[in-house]
Every structure is written in C-alpha cells, then in structure tokens.
Image (tube, rainbow over all chains, first blue to last red; front, top):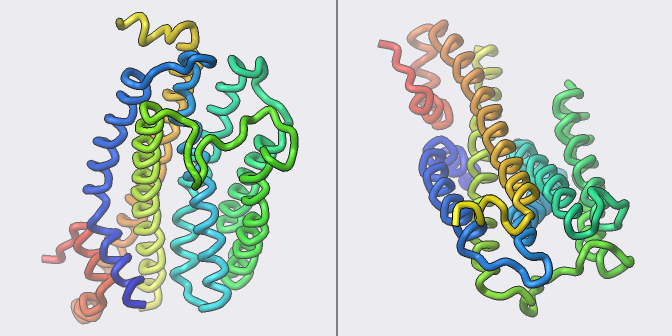
Amino acid sequence: MKLILKINKISFKAQKYIFFLFIVVLSIGVVEALILSPSDYKQSDSVRIMYVHVPSAWTSIGIFSVIAILSLGNLVFKNKYFLTIAKSLAPSGLIFNIIALVTGSIWGKPTWGTWWAWDARITSMLVLCIFYILYILSWRVFENKESVKKITSLISILGLINLPIIKFSVEWWATLHQPASIKLSGSSIHSSMLLPLFVMTAAFVLFSILIFLMKYNTELIKIKNKGLDRI
Amino acid sequence: MINEIFSMNGYGLYVWASFIFTIICFVGLYFQIKLQLKKEQEKFKIKYFDLTKEETETLKKQETYREILAFTNISKI
C-alpha cells in the first residue's frame, strides 16, 4: 500500500521530467536511426524502419504482459490500484501495437513485395491488437464495477496466452517474418545498428511511462471526483 | 547529403512514412490523454469550490487530495 501511495505521489510530479527526458532521448534516437546508422547490405535504407517497428512491438508486448500480471495480482490480492495501473497502461500499449502493425506493413512492401500477409507473427500481433481493443472497450462499455473487473481481468489473462505464440511463431511455423535477431544468448545485429535500436526503445519506453502517468493521474482524479460527490 | 537523407536509396517514402506515422500517433495520443486529464481537473475544481470550509479542511488531511490540489494549482483564498 505504501508503494501505491508513492506511485500516486510520483505520478503527479514526474511528468515534466519524463517528458523532457523523452524528447532528448527521442531526438538522439531519430538522428542515430535516420542519419548516423549504416544501411543494410541486403535491405539498403529500408532497414531504418526497424528502429520504429521493433521497439514498438517490444513495448506493446511488454505492456500487455504487465497488464496481465497486474490483473492476476488483482484477482489474488484484491487491490483496486492494480487495475487502475493496468487500465492506465492500456492506451500506450494499443498505440505501440498499431505502430508495429502499420510500420511492419510499410516495411513488408519493399522487402516482401506485399503490404500484408496472413503470416503467424503478423496475425498473432493482430490478435494482440484485438485483445487491447477489447480490454479498453470493456472499461468503457460495462458500468458495473465488479463485472468490469472480472471481464478486463479475463481478457488480459486470455491475451497472455497469445504472447508466447507471438514470440515463438517464427520458430513454430514457416513464416515470411524473419526469426529473432536479438536473443538472450547474443545478437546477430552489428553494434552500429544495435545502439540506435536500444536508444529508440528507451525513448518508446519513456513515452509509455509519460502516457501512463498522465492517464493514471486522470483515473486518480476521476476516483477522487466521485469521492467529492459523496461528501 | 540532404537529397540522400530524403531519398534513402529509393526507400525514402517507406522510411519517412513509418517515422511520420509514429510521430503522429505519439502526438495524437499525448494530446488526447492531456485533454482527458484537463477535463477531470476542471470537474475537480468546480466540485472543490462548492465545498464548505470544514469539508476542504478534511480533504487537505488526505495525501492524494493534497497532491491533486497541488497538481491542479487550486487555492481557495
């Protein structure tokens, strides 16, 4: 509970610092990605799409994992703040998912010759997008507090099953999408490309933290507004 | 140099479209959430000014309310 109060306190104060840091890191990342990093020997300059496509896919998957863990946590510990945090994370997760799908599609045209393929990796990312939409819609549609808690938890836990499918789809099925280039055991990407990739990932994570803090503040004020009605 | 950056060996349209789409999504989401936050802050302000002096004193004893009051720059002088 003390930790939650700390998050509440930080959420109001940290926004401007995170925003400033995000702008700085994003600027460095964009310069690195568009100008300083080398082009690929096979894909030429189209490889630069990787610097927005891959970080957005990583962030989107990461955010959904956190949402699902928090929903599980709420079922076990019955802490209402878990769901408020999860709800506040969802908008940035959805946006990153959409960015991953759209930039992936744009990247697909010059490399595969098509905008879209019903490939296992792409389809499982689309399924994740549907889970995000269902999760956000449930918060808007259902008014009964208890049912919305159950439904959103169910959606996020069911969506969790999809995450290993996204991760291993390129190994389990023959796909157009290339296998993972960065693994825990090492990377097949040269450091000159790896650096901008990590800088852009840091920028995207900072943006999701910024949006989370703003949304979390909105939710907190909403709760306290209801409290004022009862006075 | 500038031409090279724009043309990207013929892939400029794809690369720039990806980056511009990403930035548009960021800006759109940021302002949408900011608008929601402002709306809730305004609601809070209106409700807060309707409270009696005793009620506002009670609110100020709660930490989250204190944070919101500081964040929304409300003073009831």
